[in-house]
Length: 320
Length: 172
Image (tube, rainbow over all chains, first blue to last red; front, side):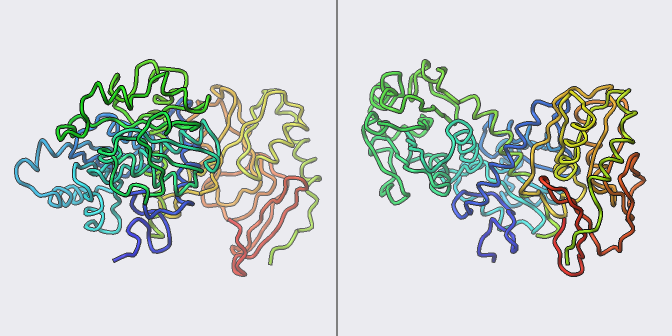
């Protein structure tokens, strides 16, 4: 067993499963490579030949149109052949196991699987199962990690706010259930951000959250005081049946990002959200559509960042 | 051991300027290949007194050995400021050896548009071609052993260095 599943023996990125366990240099290389890819969107022919002849399978056991679409566009811009599968509605419902599904697709000479699954650890399980020439990118597993989302967030922060070491960042909302928050915290810490705050009621904070290297706040205005970046999370309504919050209206009153609550943040603070947005629940429309919102640039940046990660895991296999 | 070869780069540049001057009649777009080719492109652009900005290409995303060696972490952005459709391109590089870099550069140029023509200008054309690509303009030709590599250093003062791969000189 390799000590670091995500790297090859000579230190090249092999799988992209979680930010945890990756070196700062790897994250920086993703950002600088993505930088170069953003410029091809302006060109006549928005395609690069890097992944010509490679097959990418988007294996989404859990639905997500936005993430799947940006992975698909990213792979196509790199000239890969892309297959989208939603096995939740096909083979697995006929009793085929997860690894059977992967084996079948691998037998069709798939080079890269992009995997989303409602259970934590599935991407890693598959990464441990596949042979050396097959690569795995985690597109979100349960409550564990969503590393490409975190990297497109880092890319957007760097684009609008510059060096990480001077920034104060607040992550607001359902930290407890959020794989996005977990990956963001690891990425911000690895890249050396000045301060990370998490803001939520205690019922939506993991126990001992400060061990992750963050400061916890229950009060939104205190948590936003002077921050340069506000990263909102989606309130996962489908998980809210266990009385985590008293009511949606009360949640919005206490934790919803509005023009008023935002006034505590730095004047030039940017507002981010991984989407999809619950308007009027975690964020008001005025803020979500306002001049400081970078929610749509986040989506655009997701393409370049996913291109960078795909190119990094698939390139240089001869040395792997 | 890497050593400077006894060639005055400015003499080679003088020759290229003379050879290229008739091309001004077709109003060429100058594009240099990163890094050495871009230095030369800027010098020639200035000496030929061309008004339009010159472009630069980093062909890392077009290399044919990507699946073997992976992405160059130092990749720079390509920048071609003008529309090149139906224009005459003067592509500039420091050294022509295998021809693979030029092939990659031509592939990238065609993703920006369909040029009327592409001419190739290099400071040094050496032996070791692997593709049917020759320079239209070259400062000098050189015969070297397969282990020897030639490289332009700069940009303040341009000189040509010859290194020996067998001796462990790293000159990619």
